[in-house]
Image 1: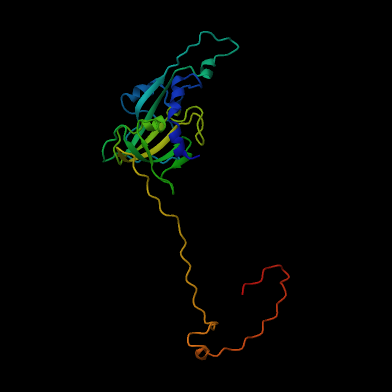
Image 2: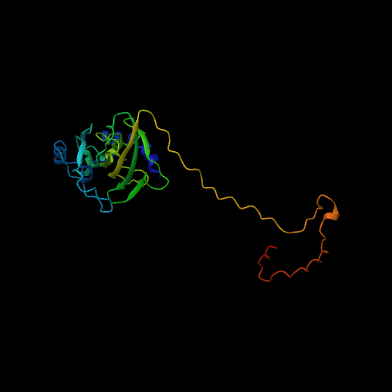
Length: 271
């Protein structure tokens, strides 16, 4: 799967999750769905879930994790009656329980450029990890280019569309994007269901117009073969001036007898 294509196709994944009537959206640690984290988000640092040690650590001295925002989805239906045979998990099964989640971040490098503005074209370098340390894709890999999108236009997942607020050009950030703001309970391609995404991003540039695509080097062309060196074979056509000026030619030798074909079946060597 090309993740960059998936980024462009997943901006609507938040809608069914906000409705909360199709799949379970049970609060859990990976989504930061606790009232405690909600309160902390309004006052400063928040606790982020544990991630694999295979993901590079943030630079020493980086600030604590904070929340850009916290959301709670409320179902539009309520359960009036449940048969004892159905059990107590009906609300969870139907996905009609409230769900709280946050978009958290750590600014790993402050930018010195202009402040990121809404509805601009952002050019982003990124690396995507799952919480288990699995690296999904990176624009820094050989043959890849930075990703460009227009902010706020639903061209990317919701966590990207809202995740660069407060950044400056040249800045770097680690985003912790819950599945409700990414690929939802179903996942997509290499993204498992209900997967929280960890993005290391850099805001390379922003512009009012869509930037031109980056230039690509021309395909590799092999070096030209050297010219065939001249031979010292006698001329077969008389030079200007007639046969008198031509050096004497040796009498032609009789053709060599044909050699028998090799018994191994190998092709004879070229003459």
